[in-house]
Image (cartoon, rainbow, N blue to C red):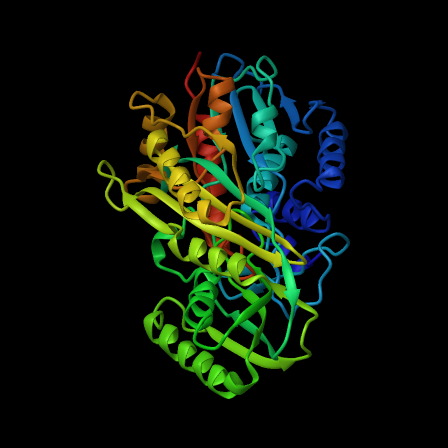
Length: 484
């Protein structure tokens, strides 16, 4: 634990956050953080429930005199994205996150910080442990596996929660009150290919230095997609130099813009020098194209031992053609909210190794029909590979409630506390609110939180001052919740 971080204000949040970051809590590996959260509630003497999915619900009675107020559900997810820089020696299964203070920000050493959504979960713990806050009935809802399928939210059963209002603490910009979100669907391509004996000069290509980030919230920023950029290189060299692909390994997580891609390739010996020169020229080309959004983009190439096998040329040409043709990035902007992405898709993962191909894309949209249309475009692009294309993990969006009482109250509180109006918006990302709302359709929901930059990447950071103000804003909201 970094004691300097743990002692930041409000200590109710930062101390709990640092305790959480001592515990490995990657998606689908939440056993230890579930046990920690359960023990936290039980140590407070509060009713603590772990449902069959692994979500934890901790119930705290109202402050005396506040029993007639509407019940509040405070919700955050306890899993985090595990991403690290290629040169960082770190084991997410055993090591605790190493946070540190850098000016006005808290960051992590070479890995994701886990502020998404650890700060939200730590905030709920602070409310549950408080002795002096005024509030109505509180239910702390800690969900699991938000980052890789939202299975916690999907598995939440009706009837466990009794609250009237849900405050989701997973928005990452101070002053924003989120009232809607996009739905999503995964497209997974899996198939086998024939391998042939490799002959020629072999090279290992590293495309790295991209910013990456959240493939919903940051898809509109025009950042490079490592999988698409690597494929563009392979497409351009496949015939010119007799290129053969041995391996490709690009991206990692389904909801992160891929930052790095690696490929092992073989070219005709007589073309080797010209091929290396072509790669370096391609590096200059895309550095020029992306000089504003991706100033740290680099492509390294080094000679390696010739592998035993490479892809059959027919399978290879089909794959690079499909990836090149597949849609990626922003598809359409919203007609209703200025600056909001309506529909997008991100090619998150490309793996080619030992006769197997895996390609994963995540499509998001606030319009269901558009979401499925892009999924069909991916079907069409990969038809040439004759591989299996499957869609899954579809989840609903969250439709804004124009008559939300908690929204109106929080807008007033925001104006009073910050002396400026709140920014009311929807986000191009899959918040759990859409799924939770399908189980509890009468919940009045809103999402807010402190400022977090570059989530899902090792550049993730949380602005210290916004956490303090976020706590004050939440406390004022709890105090002023309407009567039932």
